[in-house]
Length: 150
Image (cartoon, rainbow, N blue to C red; front, top):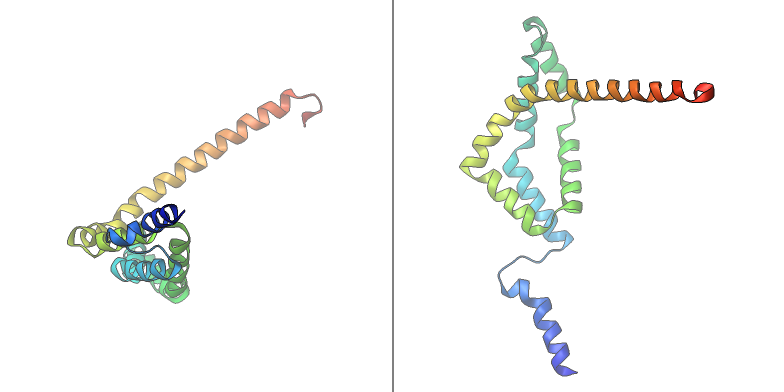
C-alpha cells in the first residue's frame, strides 16, 4: 500500500520535477497576462483598425479611426481575452504563446497581422455570405417540394 501511495505521489509530482510549471488558475492567469503584455493588444487593435480603414474612401479614414478610438474599449477586450485564455489554455500553452509573441519573430508577425486581417476578412465575409445564400436557396427548394410548403 505504501508503495502505491509513493508511486502516486511521484507521478503527481513529475511535472514539477521535470521543470514544468504547475497548471493552476493562478499560473494560467499570470501566463495569460504575460501573453497580453507581449502581444500588445492595444497596438494590435490600432494596427487592425488602420489597415481596415484602407478599405474606406480616403476622406472617411480619419473619422473611422477617431470613432474606433472613442468607442472600442480596448481594456474590456483585453480582459475578455485573458479570461477566455485562462479558461481554455494550460499554463504551458500560455507560456509558449507569451514566449512567441515576445520574440522578435512573434513581434514581426504581429506587426503584419493587422494588414493580413484587413486583406483576408472581406474575402472570408464574402465567402460566408455566399455560403449562407446557397444554404437558404437549398432550404427554400426543399420546402417548395414538401406538400404544404413547410
